[in-house]
Each structure stands twice: as structure tokens, then as C-alpha cells.
Length: 242
Image 1 (tube, rainbow, N blue to C red):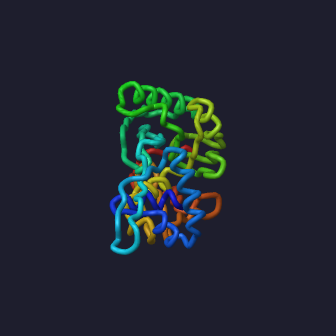
Image 2: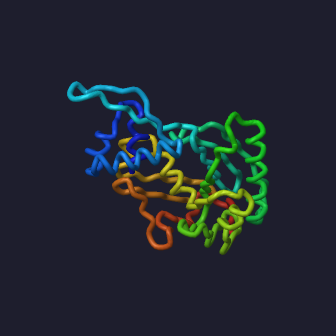
Image 3: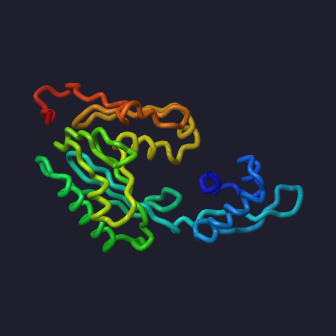
């Protein structure tokens, strides 16, 4: 919570006292939490500033490149990958087109790792700072365990994708439905959208919907809310694997 507040106030000065007021926490608790974030190298103290009354306060800022995150989007036709910093800025991105065939999940993870290794060689970022991988995958995904129940576009059923990715990338992995992650990404940098009611609709090899209510994802039973599924929108188009 404290980290998010500091991150969301990079353009306007914010101090420990400001955070304490916003969170209704004690100044002592905020000082302890911010000190931990500073020790971790994620937050730094910047210039002092004044709001017209009292003594000058010390501004807190995010160290944008303290930790980098890797993102992977898995679809039937391509793999997309990006590296972002703590402020959500994209530092590097890459795309790999897939052939018109079904790939085994092991193949997809291996190809993704190859794409990442290539990015580490050619990209202008410190790969040692990449600490976590987030994967958006088509289909019905158990976001708590990283388990893909059914991804008809890929021809997958009952796949422990998280375990495969952890073994290959050797970093913590978070996996969720691709469209739900697309909605999070779309609203991330919008103060208005990320706290409101938003829906996103995609038409690709399937029809998908993701909904956010009061800034929170609507997941439904088994994280399947919005899986419209078997809707014909192109006569004689691709057949579902089922």
C-alpha cells in the first residue's frame, strides 16, 4: 500500500506525514515501512519541500530500476515479451510469431526462454535486476496455482504451466488469464480507470471479455468470468480444438 502510494505520487511531492494521513496509520509505522523500502533500495529520499506550514518535509520517490519485471503473453499466433521497471515503463520488448500448428507447453516455455535470452543480449537493461515473470495465457487459468485447465487455442488441457516456467526461468512466476492481465495493463496508468468499472472485449481465435468493478477484477467461478467461448464470427474459420 505504501509503495503504491509513493509510486502514484511521483509528479507531486509526498512525504511520510502525507502517507500517514492517507492510510490512517501512525507516523511511526510509516517511518518503519518506508525505512524498510529504502533499505531494499526500492525507495529513495529526494529533495525537501514545503506546503506553506510547518517544517520542510522530505520527498519520497521510487527508484525506477531497482527491480525489473518480465512479462510474457502467450497466444495461438505469437509470443510477446517485455521488460518493465518499477514505474511500469517498458524498457525492452520482443515478439515471436508461431506457426499454424499446436505446440506443446514445454516447447512454448523453451521458445519463450530463448526469446528472453536474446533480449538480455541485445536489450539495454540489467538482466540481473529481472526478478519475476508474469505470464498472461489464453484459456481458463487457475491464477492462484498457475495451472491451465483448458486452452483450446493452444490445444492444452490440465497443464502445470507455472512449474514448467519456474524450472526454465529460475525466478518466481505469476500466471493468469491473458485478457484479465490485459485489463490490468490497460488501466494501470490511468487513475480514473483503475478505480472504476471497466470492461475489455477481444476478438481473435476466440471471443473474450474481462470486467473490472470498482477497480477489482471480476473472476467468477474458477476464474472463468468473461470466457464467452464458442461464438462463430468467421464462417469456415478455425475450428476449436474441442
